[in-house]
Length: 249
Ligand SMILES: NC(=O)C1=CN([C@@H]2O[C@H](COP(=O)(O)OP(=O)(O)OC[C@H]3O[C@@H](n4cnc5c(N)ncnc54)[C@H](OP(=O)(O)O)[C@@H]3O)[C@@H](O)[C@H]2O)C=CC1
Ligand SMILES: O=C(O)C1=N[C@H](C(=O)O)C[C@H](O)C1
Picture 1 (spheres, protein in one colour):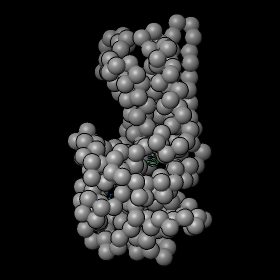
Picture 2 (tube, rainbow, N blue to C red):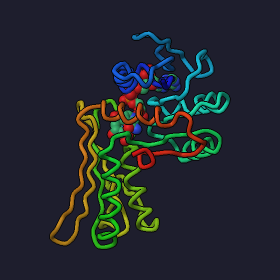
Picture 3 (cartoon, protein in one colour):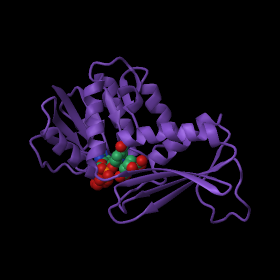
């Protein structure tokens, strides 16, 4: 039985995770952390990690970048593995996560769905073949409650393509102020926000008279919850290091 501490317990994803663990017999939530400490299930919710009086086997985090420092302090002090799904981190925060992974197991992915993991592989393959000849643009669409833009997944896809193309690409987030043609070595990244869109990511490779499009559409938040809970069960007992979807499936 994997005992989970749920960070962001009162958020949209936190509540889906709580529901998802109730249907499983290999894990349970023993405590939550959230600014809103109102309990809705049979575990207590603490306002911060420094006030969390429980211990668990793994922390699962869908919260806010502001939680990172306190969460990593707690995880390092108590030697607790962490599944980090939150997006919107600064480069310094990402470095901090990587440093923590030298001491504890950290599962870190901006998208916990199976399909996006495959989309990343397909986009890398397409970039290998078409990079340099086709223009690459990423369009992400999310609900109107999302705080960060572009999405963590859009950046993860762009980084994977850029790795394949030997870091030759610049990211272009906004052409509003541009008074020039598109640069050959750029990846355009565009964000749409509206309604209850769960999450869509499309990568287009636009060439002369032809266009290739790779698209993933999330139909529910459950796909992320299932991936994150599977990651928590997978992470228990693993040695220190950085893990992602590719290492789990
Ligand atoms: N990797 C993946 O597959 C996925 C990642 N995500 C990411 O997960 C994160 C959460 O998403 P979602 O559940 O939709 O967002 P919500 O805003 O619904 O939930 C976040 C929760 O964290 C709480 N919170 C914010 N700041 C703090 C703080 N300083 N200390 C303690 N709790 C805090 C919020 O409280 P309050 O509302 O009071 O601010 C809220 O209850 C986002 O970064 C999102 O991008 C989402 C889906 C999939
Ligand atoms: O905030 C969300 O909802 C989501 N965020 C993640 C991201 O920023 O990529 C993943 C998913 O698309 C849903």
